[in-house]
Image 1 (cartoon, rainbow, N blue to C red):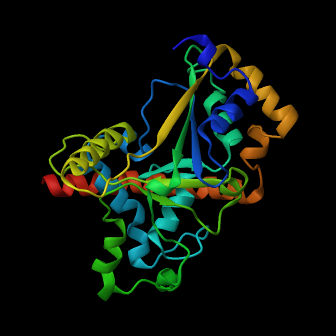
Image 2: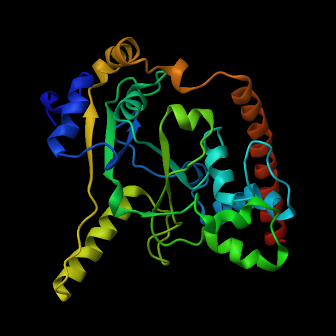
Length: 290
């Protein structure tokens, strides 16, 4: 890719969306500081082994089934627990996206430790309508407002049994989600049961396109490919873009990572939460292997 095709300022990013012809609300954005990276949940990156990842997730949501609710979560819904813990360092099957292109651009440039200073960033956009929405705000979730009933344990577990990537757009957001205009993709473990590796977005796109092409050869009603596109951010312009975002749009580390009493208390809570889940999942591994 030639340098002329890279994002070098905020207007370049805005123009790339105008070129696609989308309106606000139709697409979501994700920024990553290294254009070589695939998109996958933090849980899959930290624990690439399915068994280990599965046990960690079980350990992290386990307290809910003992009717122990986090003080920073509004219900007993395990999805709501994951959404909050994701924003405070807990590895989950969720991937953060945003409805705001400028927030996405910020995260394509924001590299405080300069770990990827010699790499172009990447701004990815996805059309929302291609993804089924996992409901979190409807009356169907009223049952999670009160303590979980042991007799409905299998019913609760089914909330996590998904075969496709789902979009989650929470109605009630914690302060960081709110200022980042955040939403999530919730990943299944794999695309095919026989797959040896956990799912990534690129894998999902490839397999979905194969499925669509195969179906379109056999049926009259035509299916569409998922629309996902990206544009890379020139590495030498990342700092200038961050300055422009701060000066002209008020988007910065300070405004996106709310430094409040709530945030500090929540961070500390989920640090302990993460330590507990790591220890508990290791205990489960040892128990299952003995």
